[in-house]
Each structure stands twice: as structure tokens, then as C-alpha cells.
Image (cartoon, rainbow, N blue to C red; front, side):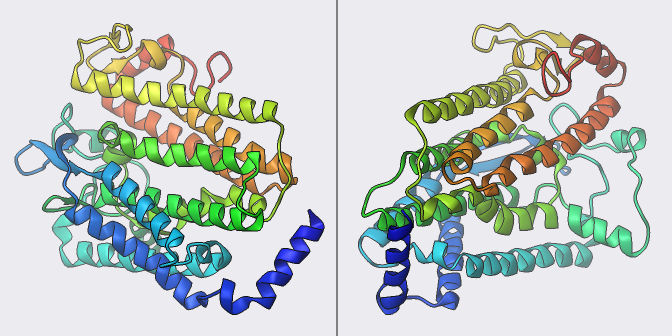
Length: 407
């Protein structure tokens, strides 16, 4: 493997003009060009119109969303793959000029974030001080704000906090919803970066791929694909009604999500080291066990929100108060869906760690732990404010926060 690596490195240097047909600036331009492609497809590809969970402040009716994410995702992946195979573009340059792509993603993300902040400052009526967007079960009101008022700093620190968190919940321009577009863009660019790394790996290995690469690429591709497939379900999740459009979300989808989530693939690209078939099966099994928890919980909540009296997978809904589901997946732990996502991240990271000895893939599950634990605390505070005594009763019924029987 070392001899092969030296040979491949020598080939890269000796045939620089052939293999590296694009300089760093052109690679960054390609990355931004694919972002533009995704944006154009989001505008023009038709999709199903779906009413959401969040309602309008004007008429108290559910916001409508044009859900074309799956079509846009598949078209983006297909066009990038065909472009590479037909030698229209060298997609591997995105991997080889990775930091140029990171720089381009940061610039675009910061520009879009600045534009949204300037929009809010030019139109102060857009600044939403509520802690959550109005929803079907809680129409526009300041009642929750009075019950749950988080502490804010003052002066410059308050401005920085507002820029980080954002001012608006759900900005729409006609059929174009900014938040749903950001999630779709992140997934499409993540898949593009995965394809770039895969093609570079196959070039390194004379057209073949290791089992470790196959497991990693397949699982993370499934992660992005099934997320987009279930975009109608995500209209009812925390991100849509509790996250605002600020630096955290905008920069995250432009510059963090696409290049960080796939960080664990990097040690595998220029490597022939592999994992056993048994370990591959364990990784896939762990991943889909976590997926069952996450997807099952989210889909059960979606089914309850849309058809509250209907059973989900044969599980009859048991409710505390008016809206606290405590049966099925939601009877296991308050945030059982977060546990599932952490398990998925661990499963994805294992091939890179075991095959190469690199700890780089561990950053992905560590990020999820750092993300979901504070989010669980915030969500609990919101639920306590929203449901009052019903939330106390629910916590007695479901005492575990994340891991059933443990915590």
C-alpha cells in the first residue's frame, strides 16, 4: 500500500496538467457552480404542494411548501456523475482542492447570512422575538414568550447573538422557502463531496473500492437521500418551528454540513486498508438500528400530528393532555430520535477508524453529541412552557431523556 501511495503521488506530480486540470480558484468556482445548479433546480423543478405545521401570522393558515427535494437531489447527483464520466468536469478536483471548496462555501454562506441580517435591519417588522414559530396547535401569540423568556445579553453581545440565531423563522419568496432550500442544498452538496471522494478513491485503486469505502459512502448517501425523501415529515420537526434563519443555520447548511459530515471519508480515499465483512455487517446493522429509532420516532410524530386518532405501525397513540405522545417510540425516551442519529453517526465513523487508524471520523459523532444534548435541554424548556403540568406528568411517565433505562 505504501509503494502504491508513493507511485500514485508521483503520478499526480508528474502529470499535474493531466490530473489537475483546474487550479484552486477553478475548483472553488465549480463548487459554487454546483450550488447555483441546485438553486436553479429548486426554483424550476416542479414538486408537490404540501401544507406545513407552521402557520402564517397573517391569516393563521398553514404555510405551503413546494416539496421537490428528492427530484432535485437525484438530478444533482446524476448531472455531477455524468459530467465526471463524460469528462465535462473533473469532479475529483473538489476532493483534491478541498480547502478551496471550504473557502468558497464559507464566503457564500457569510454573504447569504449578511443579506438576511440586512433584510431584517431594513425591515424591523421582520424581527421575530418569539422563541418558536406559530404552529397549528399554537397559533400566533406572545403567550409562550411570557412563560418562557430566555436570558439575553445586551449591547454588542445581543447583536452578535441575534446574528448567530437569526431574526426570522420561515422566510418564503413565493413558492421558494428559504429554510427548506438550505436543508436541500446541504444534502446535495454533501452528496457531491462524497462522489468526489469516491471517484478519487477509485482512481487511486484502479477502478475498485475497498469495503470500508463502500460502507462509508453507502451509509452517508442513504442518510442524505432518505432525509430528503422524508422532507414532508421534517415540516413538523424542531428545526422548522424552533430554529431561525441566522448564521447558525445559513452558514451551517452552506459551509459546515456539506464538508464536515463527510470528513471521515478522507482517510479512506488514498488507502487500500480495509475492514472485515463481519465488521461491515455490524456497522450496517448498528446504522439501521439507529435509523429505526430516528425515522420511526419522527414518522410516528408526523402521523400523530396529521392523523391524531390513527395508529402508527399498529401502535395506538396514547396522549397526555392535548399533544404529548407517550406511546411507541416516544414512550422509550423524551429524545429517542437523537439517540438514533448518534448511533448512525457512530456506525458511519467506524470503517475509517478501524481501517486507517485515523481519529478524524470520530469528529462526526462527537459533533452530534455536542449538538443534541444542548438541543434536548432547550426543547425540554420549550415543552415545559408550552404544556405546563402535562409536561410534568409526561416526564413521570417517560423519565429518560436520551437512553432508555439509563439517562
